Amino acid sequence: MKLSEIAILVEDKISSNSISLGDYITTESLLPNKEGKGVATNLPPVVCSLTHFREGDVLVANIRPYLKKVWFADKKGGCSSDVLVFRAKEGCKSSFLYAVLLQDNFFDHAMKGVKGSKMPRGDKGQIMRYELPIFSLQEQENIGNFVINIMKKIMLNRSINHNLEAMAKQLYDYWFLQFDFPDENGKPYKSSGGKMVWNEKLKREIPEGWELTKVVDIAKVFNGATPSTTREQNYGGDIIWITPKDLSDQKQKFVCRGERNISQIGYDSCSTHLLPVNTILMSSRAPIGLLAIAKTELCTNQGFKNFVLQKENMTNYLYYYLQIHIKQIEQLGTGTTFKEVSREDILKYLILKPNETILYLWEEKIKALNHRQFKLQEEIQQLIKLRDELLPLLMNGQIEIGVERSRQNCD
Image 1 (cartoon, one colour):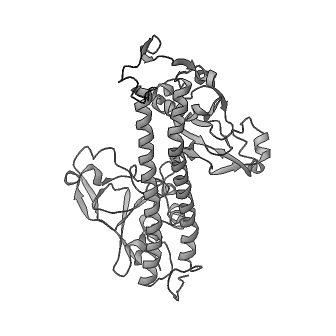
Image 2 (cartoon, rainbow, N blue to C red):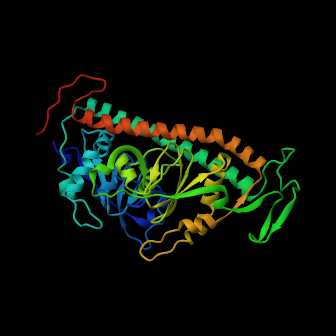
Image 3 (tube, helix red, strand yellow):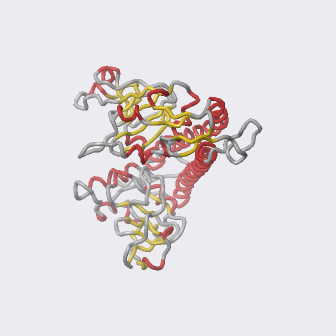
């Protein structure tokens, strides 16, 4: 049967001045790779009509369907016209509809009917002709529950990781921006009268014993490179190769895989560098400032500057230092079409370096938190893999959940 037999495209309207910002959905606030939604930047500047969605509807961005932006609404609100709102018909479970629209096959189907090249837009008629097998209500419920339970666990893990990262940033702020790290008596250093000295270059006071140094004095910095994309033998090997898109898509503090690996032939053909665990990766062009910490040996494309620290107790400190000062680093970028920060400018960039005792204490504090974050991140990846591998099998009848059934295929 076709999608149009189990769902409608909602056309109900609501005025933009009757909803809050948190209830407004745009193609930008929907997150790629099936990650749900964020918060819109702002409401429409002038009062207008929006598509009125309700709890249980499934929202899909209709601009660039390959981004796989989909959200199972847990409340009512309004959305822009480039967001499609699907509502389950009577006799179809809304959770099952969500499972249908979560499939890679659905987005592949949507892409076959797009119009436009720069900002491809799906064709509604073609989308509603998407074909799927017939399932009983019980079978729909089983498949829907499977997807919902996995997505809830993914979202919970992301929420925990978000809170852990907020804790890490707060601790960094307390120790290294307010300078209230523990003194020898365990009391906040600056607040307890710890000695501060004026630093002329920074135009501010810093703790006694801290020093201003350059990146070149604490780390080696390596550029990445890209093997020729016209030679198939350069790709598909065992060497992990990271691009800025990988960091943009994954949005994770740690990275241990990319969308595409390269072969030994590809590695040998270009000037990329195999980087050790705990290397800090920083995208240095288009866009500048994406950051991650490598959790396995890997290499990157030319869009990175990669920091290999001389001492491991500097890794987490430098990661947050770069994050805090990323706007300054962006200003070092030069170029017309694409701005890029050069390796030479990075090597000269000034870093405020705490004394070794404080760095050791910071590393001990952050180590357990990092371990928990990484384990949660790995579990998220495993759940996503489970979802994306099992969902197609459930949909084509190769595996079943819970009940015996007979299924009619619609060929």
